[in-house]
Length: 203
Image (tube, rainbow, N blue to C red; front, side, top):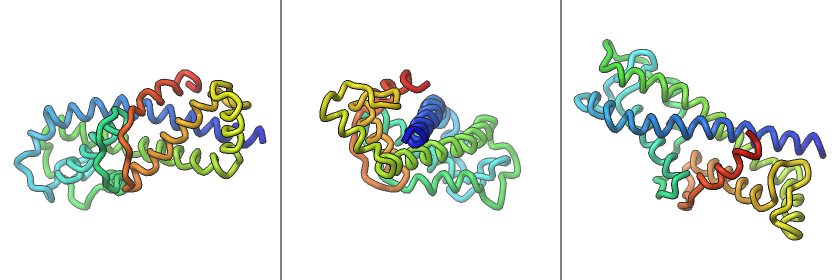
């Protein structure tokens, strides 16, 4: 059982490391797109190439910004627009056949490079959330957490760094994260509080 708990804890740590990085970068990129990139690509049509290195079209940049805005909302207690964001990641990772012939703007090229890199961190974050969601059921963590919850929700679950109550809401966060990328409806809540409660316990 100790190896199973280690597996569970390691994926929680991976998830939190990636999520902290994603939160920092999404907030910066949201501003970069709104303040500069959206204007720089305004003369292009959706199917026009917009970047050289990453071979992304205008629509790809728009769609990834939409992902960013909604992921920020996901954590910040704001409404989330449902979409298949996993597909958005794949599009940015693969690019298109035709790159832009010349730099539209340095900001646009930089934005394309950064969302390409960020897409892989987001993918890893979602994969960790999925592993934790499965482990919660498959290695009897649910039964362990529920047993501690029934006695004392503020007690530390054996083998972990979290109380039963914190683990319960944290696993719900990860389930919500999987749903976010899978085009499932998302309930509005302040998930940043959950994240901030977990980070000091694992990082």
